[in-house]
Image 1 (spheres, helix red, strand yellow):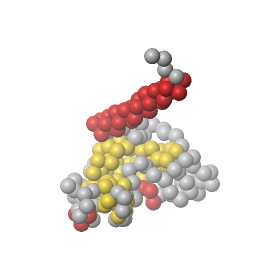
Image 2 (image 1 turned 120 degrees about the vertical axis):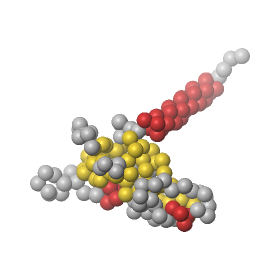
Image 3 (image 1 turned 135 degrees about the vertical axis):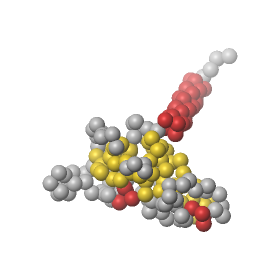
Length: 172
């Protein structure tokens, strides 16, 4: 049986897309298993999507720091690239606070770590964990959410693992 060029192209595209999908899943699982747990303070909004059900749109306090300042305290007039890193300071409770954001990673101190951001603009940026979906009718218990718990790996990749209350207890 001889395969046509179209069949071979489709087969190659299927194999490559399957490979990249499986690699992405493995990378996320690695981040969940080996990443450092941190808590980011939330500024939540509780919308409802007709197509997706109940969810909470997450805005993190670190995203409120939209301006980059130089060492003299002056606003940096250079636009940041659409992808880069947010540097955060992690305290003894594992709560992270914004320090700066930029295009490159330097060597952080022991209590600091970098989180990748994308869609950077003058007004906003995302760290990739901006929605939390939950079962319909459970919105009331998630209103108490104060922190998003993220696992962050050594490359700055982050995965949202749950929402936490003011005492850093997982909301279930």
